[in-house]
Length: 446
Image (tube, rainbow, N blue to C red; front, top):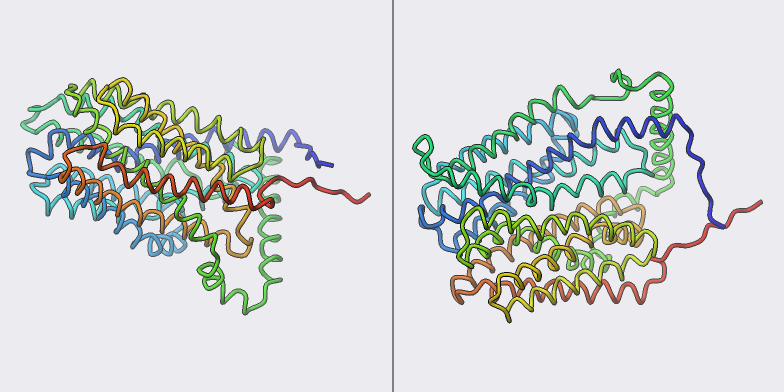
């Protein structure tokens, strides 16, 4: 039979306070991070022509971003361990805000590429830094829903950022700057401000806060301490040889590479459409504001569907199938864009692309956690995310080259279509072959 855990009133009140005091601020930070990462997509509507950027050069800039992001991920995580998550999150935000502001003064492909590389280096470590900070406050049984809520900031950044970017782009000539320069400068400032606020708003530890009473602080401290003790006991049970060979175990695990292919398609889809969608919509002869308003629609639908599909996945328990179905929809919708010149149909198809793409986030990471060995699951998650971003960088360059060669956005999306289809097939096969991914009933000895 299933074991139902009773939740005490002190636990309910503690989690509620933590969720309202900490999570919204971190979601806001991540939302700003993603706006600053992809706002060059809107800036490109006028920037590319003004500074002489071809689609190939624009795509290569995105590749340079991810090269730096991957290269500096581990050093950033090491520094975070030394300085603490709160201080390092603040440093990351202030740095990327300054670099984002300076990007407004690029003058050609070389300076643009350097700016994107530096932006990737600055942002590296932000996501794992936030995850580390959350583990210092939330018991592990709440982490799945907390992380899912946190990641909704990704589609929301495009939903909210699109009209703002379009509005700023329309201020061309203000203070003697081009619209794309004003866009990059104004949208970089919140990152610096929030970075400074991190130091004041985010507390170091539960004992310091005044908005938890003594009983709530004790419950939280005892719960987190118990979980730390359990992890230490589990680690002590591992032999020294097993600890040394974690990387070997990971690299020799076939699921690492299968999961990487699946997530590479999803990562590439979200990042490519965040960067290129404004240009795709603009090709239908829309104004910047019309482009911004229409760009909101697919990402808004994706944010809502992401939450719904995550809940559905938890109920069904078949992580593989709940990853495969949305990816099939993503791949098919990308393919169908080849056969239409209608703005309305294209918008519907891109909405389906993004709804399917963001829907896999919950079931996919749950599948990874369930399938990989507990001794290497943390390392596996970091490795899959890193390797997938390498694929994202390559796909961005390929997108730009194909756009310049074919003159068609739909043709340039075909490699992405193939990658997401491959990921969908893999996820479907995992669903059919691996019954261990399905929820098991817990037997209780009386």
